[in-house]
Structure formats: structure tokens, C-alpha cells
Image 1 (cartoon, rainbow, N blue to C red):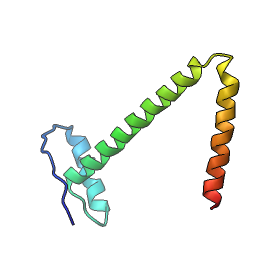
Image 2: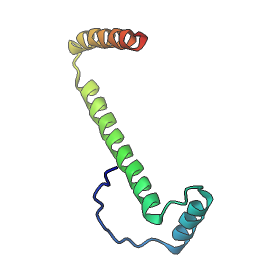
Image 3: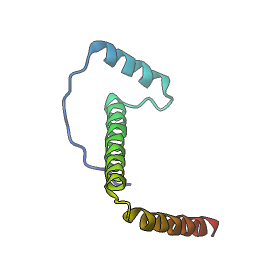
Length: 90
């Protein structure tokens, strides 16, 4: 098993938040470290930010379509949907 390199960072958080974090740690059977819980939270936050950016880019793309572009886009969407159904049925 290979271990990923870890960076070190020091953060300050409110005492009540730290107490709640410690209660969550104690309730989990694997008893993760504070660092592990903070890393999990940051990973989820980062993934959410990426998802939001993709949604914004997708919305911008569809808003940019002209009336002339929309029929072709609908055709491509139909082709893609058919391809996905074929793949999932295999």
C-alpha cells in the first residue's frame, strides 16, 4: 500500500465547533483523527465547488445557444441518450 504525501496546515476554529467535531469522532467506530475528518470535509467541499462550476458552465452553454443551434443540440442529446442506454444494457 502506498501512502499519499500529506501537506501540513494549521487552522483555528471556534471551540464549540471543535467540541462537536470531537463528539462526531467519538461516535464513529473507526475513531478517525481530527485531521481525517477535516480532510473529508474539505474533500466534500472541493467536490461541491467543482460540481457548481460544471453546472454554471453547462447553464452558460445552453443559454448561449441560438434558436438555430437548439435543434442540432436536441439531436445530439438524443444520440447521446441512445448511446448511454445501449452501453448500460450491455
